[in-house]
Amino acid sequence: MTETKDPSAGMSLLRALGIGGLALVWCCMELTVRCAGETSTADAASTQPPADPAIVVQVAQLRAADAATDLAAAWKANDRRYIAVMGVGVYIPGIDQATLGPDDGMRVIDHTSDCPRNDTEEALDDLAKAYATKYNTLLKQRLAMARAAAQRAADPPADPHRPVPQDSMSSRMP
Image (cartoon, rainbow, N blue to C red; front, side, top):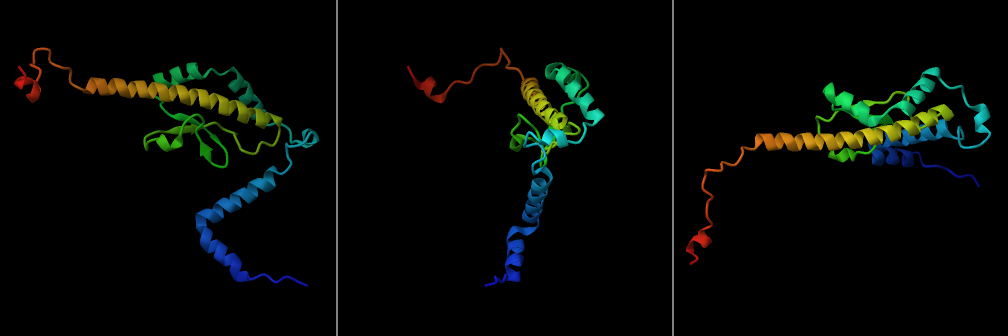
């Protein structure tokens, strides 16, 4: 017995998902095809593409990088952007992205991916995420301190010679 498929079933799925849902489904299918088995087995190491020299250099730089020192230099240069990495989309490790404001910027670490093709790219992704998490956590703390200091500076200081208003109830008490 042969099975017949209703062509309208596919159209109803497309209507239900909408363009955004369809794009997400396509992206997940593409990711599955690209990543299928590339680095998941021991045999994959022998079939990995050679490491890009630029990525090898970038891995070495990230291994030597110090997030606190780099943040101090960026702060001095008035750079308040978070560091992001690429996955299925761009994300900022160590930060709840729902809390970001419209003025919060970011810069993406080059060559990061959710689908590394070899051990060097996997090392880059791991190092980039760890570095970005530390950097972003420190930046968030520093921004909070700077905002608190700006708020204190904006609030007028209390006048020590101004009389303190008394509560209406306390003035009636004997």
